[in-house]
Image (cartoon, rainbow, N blue to C red; front, side, top):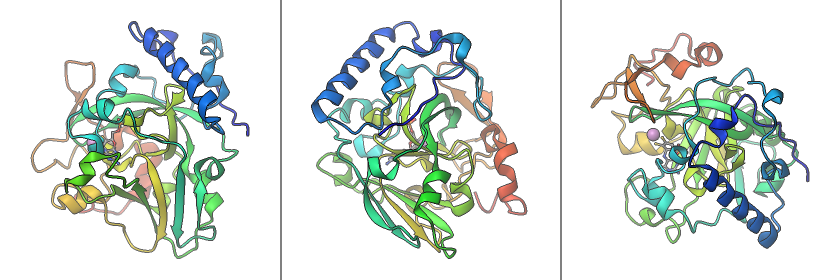
Length: 317
Ligand SMILES: Nc1nc2c(c(=O)[nH]1)N[C@H]1C(S)=C(S)[C@@H](COP(=O)(O)O)O[C@H]1N2
Ligand SMILES: [Mo]
């Protein structure tokens, strides 16, 4: 199986390999090499990830990429929300080390013409992996810039062929309390569940990511397969997805079930709708001192605002 991956576009090598990260990258390459040899993975990790980054001159940022400075790999992979592995930011990187993202199956269910339990590699076979540099905004008012590696969810939706009656898609994370110890207590309704309206799933910004920084996803970032929706608060991006269900009803979602007055279904980044306990008008970019102004739809309004025209976004928050 061959997946073509364009080189990381527009990323100065100083950002790909920030000082102090060089070692990490070497460690990573070793891990990948070992993983490939040991498991004979029918790789979702493109062979090119093993090679050195492409020459500077060959890189161009794509239409959807932000040209803001990347958040260092170190921060992206050690400052995480993944409650299954602990509630502190550094917990997931420490506690997900032994998580097994292979072999992996995804159950496709509901109002769709091709329901089945798919091996992940079959599910995404032939899709071109793209680098997409997105601003990501957490509901807790911090943000990062992450170079994701993935493919538009629209491609998968098309492949699975939903019935006309399907209006929403639900995504569920793995439920495995033996690997995910926090699932032994009722922190959230497990498994972690998220959902999108059908038009949101096929918006060209919406990705299923299998990697970041040109490498396969670290466990703490949702290996092997997670949702990325850059105009919404980070919690919409369900990690380690094992179930995709097409439905005619708006799905229950983990955070709105936990606290419906604080977290809605839409969760579009909106500086004008404050969280009941803090402002959403500002954010702290990881690695920066002064707060930034939060942008409507996290700055992606040109691509997404029309999906919500006529909706009262204070009501549908
Ligand atoms: N299964 C699962 N997915 C999850 C979460 C979680 O706790 N469990 N946290 C969410 C939140 S609040 C954020 S901000 C993003 C963080 O993604 P990152 O750690 O890759 O930056 O993951 C989201 N996806
Ligand atoms: Mo978040």
